[in-house]
Image (tube, rainbow, N blue to C red; front, side, top):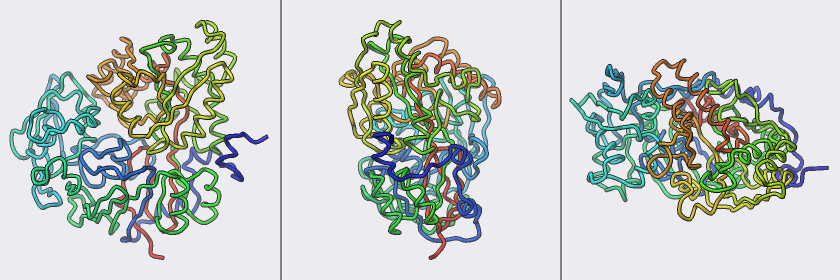
Length: 541
């Protein structure tokens, strides 16, 4: 008998194997298109999973979606990730910072900047531009300080104690304690033209966004962001003539736009459309990457103050059926933040949280809930990185009902959920027992949702309010380790230790489903939320 929720969105779908998705889910044609670097030109038109285009400030709005399609195209940062490869999880390397050294006490970093780099308005990038943006993000009372940008960037700026510019080509940044992760943090701090911000002010600047990046803004509205290639880009011009970002929150609208030729790339098409798109020659791109659907639990009140209740949720969810049934192989079951094969995967924890409803019921009985309990959960109506929230949470709702948990779903707009994630379960947010949303963990500062110094409002973004001295020590050890291999091993240990205490419920690992028209050439899908489209081009019809 068909699954009642599955039938609503997957009628007539054929099964994509999990093995195909794990290997990248690519057809022969898609692989050929990815390797095709022989041309140049065209406009890449992308329909993103968002109701509006992220505002092109620094950083752009809408969290990781804004960084993927807006910040990373218009701006550069001191460090960057190697995204034009799929074989390894990207790590930081030089970008606007050509090189760096660290003081003997491991607290002061000295960055030598690239010289000759220009903003889109022709003004020079130098150390004064770095200090200008750091003031804008971290120094209340400075002329262009922005409370909203400061909140959005708190993930990256939290450990910065001070900074100065000894000369135009040098910046020194001092952290509150030794912080080996600063290079990761700096990859998410983007630099606008100080001249443009001063000219237009914080309020009007996004309409005139000006960076040093590979694309320049031609026009911006809530529905469409039109970018043109920066032919004078300091790393060499992109192959594309233009990049158009269009907001389309509804999956069926994105699908229709791709099939009509209005766009040539869409995020997360409806799963049941995947076989048809492949048969039409479109490239279906999937890849394991650091993005996981989770339930963030409110640990400030019952029932989730009890670790047995938290653990019961882990065993109540049938992740394998969710992936192989409802989503036709477009996800991987998740028992911890990282997926198997990633350097941060804790092998000692492994896939501990398998489907075991009997064990879930036993844990609930031990916690005094033999007659069941009710929880109120905020879920997104859609938006960046949410996959297909309504049908997926309905499956979770059915799983939990089977073990005696009544899960009341409260749909909220995705930007409101982002706000709750930064503020925590405080004030009116206390009404929710949990928050269902994605966890992007592409960098350590994103993966660490568990340290007590990241509990809002002082830090970001331990929405659960989770506090565990052993976990704090584990993440402190990561920050204090400057050897990359040892750092990765400590990261796996820290994430595994946190997962074993279940402050969040892990659901599935997203596989970053993208659908590209056959005309889109040269795109490599990395093990990252972020994309590099500088080598992409669009083949003429």
